[in-house]
Length: 133
Image (cartoon, rainbow, N blue to C red; front, side, top):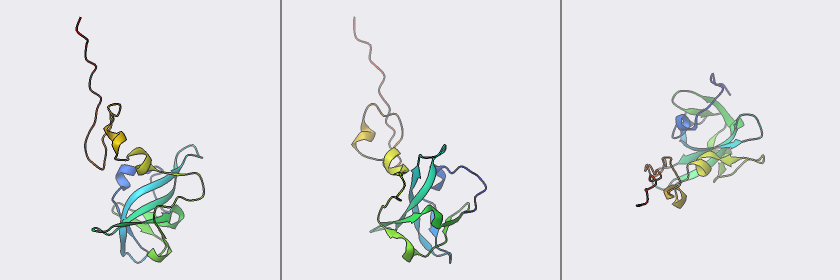
């Protein structure tokens, strides 16, 4: 896979169009699976969101990616070769967006101080109140 920069940032790739070898739209990048078995997290698969109204997911192995360019992720395989659903590769991996950016009850916890990308709300712990003396 051709890429000039050795590091990929999830925020720069999320939502990027995914194209097949003929340049046809497959969907948009929805998540990345990474493994922590190396010094730096290595991408092992990508999750593609296909459709707008009734969207569904497809999983592509990272070795099925031909290239990354400024506007799209290009696959070297046709859409028929992609696996339906959210499937992790056999090596120990996890989905970055699902684990780190998940929107649910835990993102509203007072102990959280990060922004949730799905609900676009920023939650920060409230400052400790001084007790009256």
